[in-house]
Length: 208
Image (cartoon, rainbow, N blue to C red):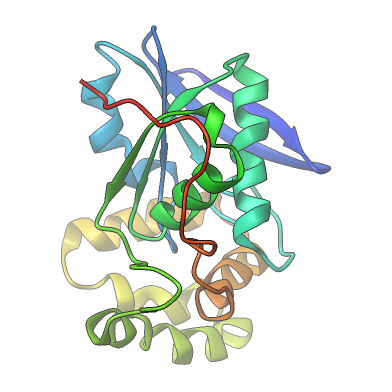
C-alpha cells in the first residue's frame, strides 16, 4: 500500500493511497489515524484514487501545536497540491467531518463532493448535542493524566472491545504523545467548523 509524505506550513504530514482515478480523500476523527477510515476507503479504491492522511497531530503526522479548523483545512489543500489534483471528493468520519466542512467553506471550488459520516457538528448555532458532550467528557480526565501516565491514560476509552484496544495499540506505536494530547485538547477549544454556515461558490457534485 503506497505511502507518501507532504509538507504543510513547515510540518511533514503522512498519507497513504490506493487505486486510480478521481481522488477521494477520507479524513479520520479525533483520537484516530488513517487506519480508522480505511475500511471505508478500501472499497472505493477499486474505482477511485483513495487517500487517507494522518491529520496534523495524529499518527505519523507529528505536531504538538494547537490545532484550528483552518489549519487542518489548509493541510488538506496542501495534500491536493501534493497529488496534483485541483479538486477531490472530501469525506470525513466523526470529527473528521469538521475538517471536511471547513475545507469546503475555505476552498469550495476544490470540492468535487462532500461526504459526512457520523458528523459531530450541527452548526455554530446548535453546538454539540447532549449525547456528544457526554461522549467527549471522558476525554477530560485522560488529558489531565496523560503527561504523567502517557498513552495509558487514554486506554480505558478503547476498552469497549478487543478490536478497539488492538487498534489503540497499533495507533500509539506510531504516534507522538505531545501531538496526541494537543489533538484531543483541541476537541474542547475549537468552535464549530461550520461557521460561517453557508458554502459559497461552485456546488459539489454527488459521488455516484
